[in-house]
Image (tube, rainbow, N blue to C red):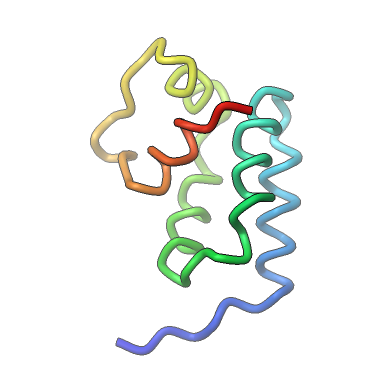
Amino acid sequence: MITAPVDEIARKRLLWRATHRGIKEMDLILGGFVSRHLEEFSASEIADLERIMDIPDQEMLSWATRQEAVPAHHASPLLARILDLKP
């Protein structure tokens, strides 16, 4: 399967979405991770990141603080890397 390269506008849009979540903690966790790694993401990681962006902040924050486990249907290697970030 051939995937098209992710254009710069899409990457900038993802960075903006990651840093403007609505909850400051998620801006720091998700935004910090995306800011550091966005340029190295593959097309499949970009697709996974788009899916992750749709997860509500409160859910993701409860996973990041280990108050709740990540449900299997949301689990992915990229999400695990994000949640392991120590801002």
